Length: 342
Image (cartoon, rainbow, N blue to C red; front, side):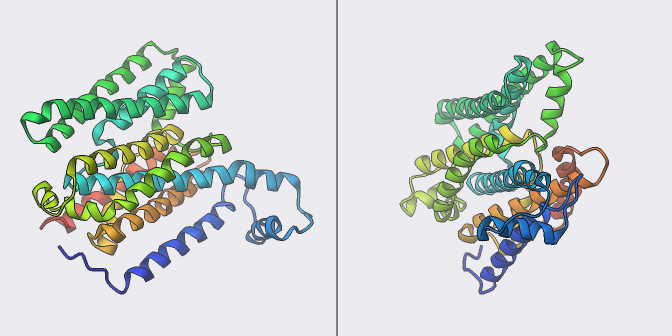
């Protein structure tokens, strides 16, 4: 495994950042109400240069009240899921690991379904999803710590995550079973499909702090992820506290995943496919792999969200699109990397 940084890495990261900036600008233009590029540029410039507005007020409302929160949410959610996926894949030394491996997605789904069943507000639904996502991973970690004393701690954690995920998935099914089929059940089903259609500024504020904080912590730990990817014994020999490191990685990845799911619903494949794409582009060195995964995840989900708004007359849920795009592409990745991973 080569961990040296090539001279082209900086160029690749720069291209990704420019792509994200370009998509950020383009995303203001697309939607049910198209806005001309020059109009978008002038309105954005006016916020900095204090130019007197001559455009209709409704255009500015669409840009800053509707599309801007959605754009930022897509960037945050994509970055969160891909960063968490990359961190988990390195920590568990398994390329098939995704952010849902420890039950956070199932827990957040139950929290949201329960809140919808109880007719809570949008913010209440987000908080419930966030809290139950954290609870699910706490249960997973607690069970794995207790049982893992007699076996492989990593294996026990994955098995405990499967059990807890199945348990909370059953709770979701039970919630859907008792929900009103006319109003509540469709709302629960639509939330579970994943979408950013109802995102607002409050949702962005709610998710931004844990997502940004968790990504910062994981970025600071990326050198240790290089070490632990060789195995626990090698990491301990190099002075790394594997128990503390694993706890910090799980906590940070859970925080950002739970916050992302709370505002977007279930969006699959991002945390599984994007880290592989990043690894193909930049290599296995977490010093650059983790930041690249963060940027590429933001680019990927923002691009998919733009397509979701314009492909059909009715907006397609993001979870459907990411699965349709990610599943065949992941099969291709498996074929290309069948000789080994890393």
